[in-house]
Amino acid sequence: MGLALGDFSFSAKKYQPKLAFSTLGCPKWSFETIVKCAVDNGYQGIEIRGIQGQLDLPLCPEFSTPARLAASKQLVESNQLRIVDLGASAQLHHADPTKRKKQLDDARRFIDLAQQLDCPNVRVFPG
Image (cartoon, rainbow, N blue to C red):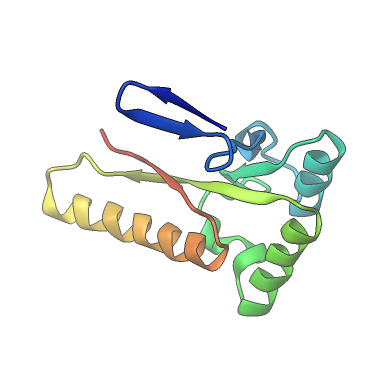
């Protein structure tokens, strides 16, 4: 059953938002604690902004090797959760070519990680 509004059609079957929380609110928690909290409190998704104080997610031990990344992904999936987005610090508003290149490179590292985690979104600061 869908809802038509003007020229837009919304279908409950096509888009099901997930109840999620951000790890920004629990900066010292381990990845296992984050997943357990999500499960225990009925969440379906997690925004990963940082893990144990590390905001540069590609540097987190949980994603540091293909085996660790696969184990982290499996932990999320086996608990019927989804990583709904990765929170990057990339600031894309810089006009200076050197600064802009560094920020774009940082965003690309997060995009690469998101792809490996089957995560559909990466949050950046557009300016």
